[in-house]
View 1 (tube, rainbow, N blue to C red):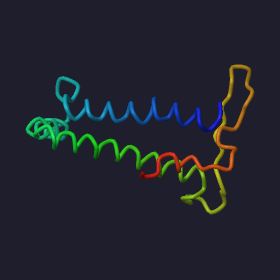
View 2 (tube, one colour; view 1 turned 120 degrees about the vertical axis):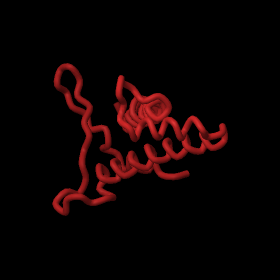
View 3 (cartoon, rainbow, N blue to C red; view 1 turned 45 degrees about the horizontal axis):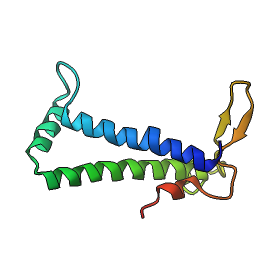
View 4 (cartoon, rainbow, N blue to C red; view 1 turned 90 degrees about the horizontal axis):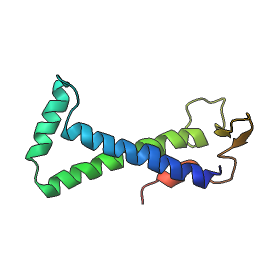
Length: 116
């Protein structure tokens, strides 16, 4: 798996899934007695018109993108959390235990999530 394939999987299985899950959570909180804050958000969201609900969904999507940008900036070493670490490396490991670095190229993973 190379960095492009990895980021494609992150887009599909992390970014988009998280956006979808949050929209569902803020539309229909789960459980018999959901947290009151989630009920309040769902009630407020239901009162929004279609345009404003779309803007809220965009805010959710941009928040998820920004969180991924920040996380991968740490992985790439662009955002320092430990002065002794230059860059973190992500490895893909197959069933035989062979490890291949995913972010071994010169490109930075966080650039994929940078604002357009």
